[in-house]
Length: 262
Image (cartoon, rainbow, N blue to C red):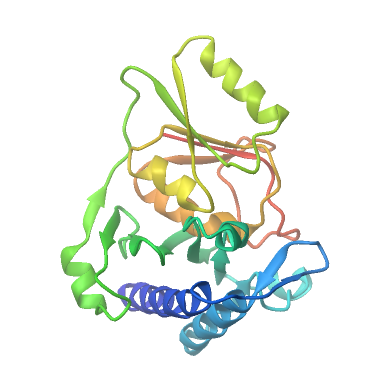
């Protein structure tokens, strides 16, 4: 597992390099069949990550790969789930709040996760045993995995003291989310913390927020790495349809609504 974690970290860092090459240019924006934006950075990062993960012989589900039918995927006991550039809208806005997400799934559960933020050089990852999550600000994408393992610090969630911090998306504060916040406000002072991409999971995992309600569509590659990082520090990611922990490599890769809670 330590070897697989090292591979995922290297893949995320190198993908970050490719993303920044495009970020600092006047890039073009395409639109996929579902109207979501796509840039050269998404494609290049995906190619880099595939190059690292394919030799592991573990199948890959990536936003930018051709999606395989569940009739084939249902036989997988493990798989990688990848979003080579989570937060393409944030990338296009150039606000820096986009990430590289890589997760390892075993029997539907996220057991390893890596999230890298190319602009701020923040790297979040689970330990190989999945019992802690760590964070480091790398000096560059050329830092070795050995340096990362040596210098990363544990992160931990926190309990609310004077107010409950609820993290939300600038793009998705819909009526259901507002209703959720209103319920919390009945008994607590509430502060809304805005953040893009999978960084919302990281905020709860490192104690900078306490709740992340997501009453809007997400795909498995949006959440798997963040879910793994939260799991490792005891933060729950609860499917609001089943009442249980979110599952992965499902017949439909679209997630149900969920709440992340410390």
